[in-house]
Image (cartoon, rainbow, N blue to C red; front, side, top):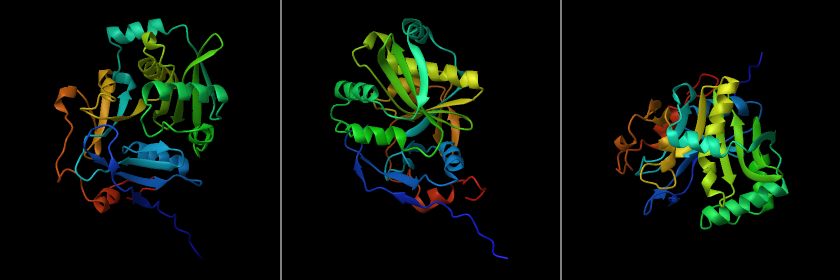
Length: 268
């Protein structure tokens, strides 16, 4: 009798390129394809090990001389809003939430373009057209939703969200940059915490927290923040305890990193 063994995912490393978060540094990513019948289980397993999803790819930073980027998540049970966050929730309470299938619309793209032009005009996504936006939203082999926030008939904010077995992953959020008083970036996180709590899911995955980067500093304002570092999740007690680490011996060789990855079938 012939037995077919599951094929282990193959991992690759990108070529170094300028870091979008810290000036003068180079970034490199470890990544693997996300496809087939095991896509959901692989996404769940690797998300718990610091990986993020972009369309049909899972990746995490693997920079040669820097370990500043850390995957971040909020432990819903440990979260309590501070006074500022309570004010944000109150100011944006008029917004109506609607969860849709991961199917791109022209209204979403118009908001996405407005967000990029106002906040990230020189970023790596600045030139994305409607077809590329649609690919970002629609090319997902797992359970994803586009969560929209509207006022009357106007789309104000949206977030592409993956539903994991232990939480919600905020893959990409965008909003009207002219609505500064609403603090929409903060509000989207607060609302995802509410959704996770309602669904009985313990975590909200936020992407990467980068000490020393103004773009990422806001994530440290959320109580219950945890970061993935040195092979495990740990609670952030004081953000000042973390810095933008730079040392040639901080990052393990790629082969050692891959060898320690736990796959959903129990192999590593």
